[in-house]
Length: 279
Image (cartoon, rainbow, N blue to C red; front, side, top):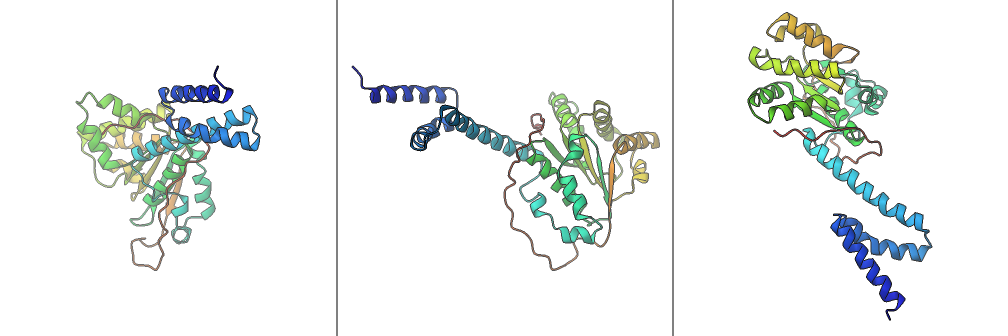
């Protein structure tokens, strides 16, 4: 007859095999140590089960964050911890405004944000900082140079991938359009960007952050017709918050120490998201 210890060992091995079959490899690796810790510290059954699943949820959240970061077009060098508030203040940014935006209420409310100003005033860095903060909160984010996005959509127009690519960008929680209205758009290409912005507005799928060196009243000049340009602008500006950055270019030499890059940790809050677009 098997001893109780032998039976317990067999039961544990069977449980570990089941966890591996369910592709819960990390849970299987940690469970023996957790059982010892629970016995040593007198955990109850609910405490033990709760800790097992808490660790698994943290792992899944981290893996989801890493996938979203890779797909976003951003990197670990962005985030509020890397934002230089002194330089921001030099360009007319109130630190509290930046911190409030970093809370991503505008993303939750599906409002757009327009960052305007001269070249080198930090619009792109601010936009990407807010994108990184949205990623931490579980939102899906895609960041594009606007001209590059126009070329991407146009290049895929006849591909079987186009519908899936278009839908993923259309439905993403936060879309960053950098350098909007920088150069005139070709008529046959810009219609895809126009449709994307119109669809996001009408379907209320998510927020857009726009950075632009051009005043919003002049955006229409970069489109094939004034009617298209004005319709495009109306959708982006509807209910949007605007911030104008001022001052000298950030690229001028100055004595500013650069912070060391650290990974962006995911926050506890979670948002919605879709699969990354295949480019």
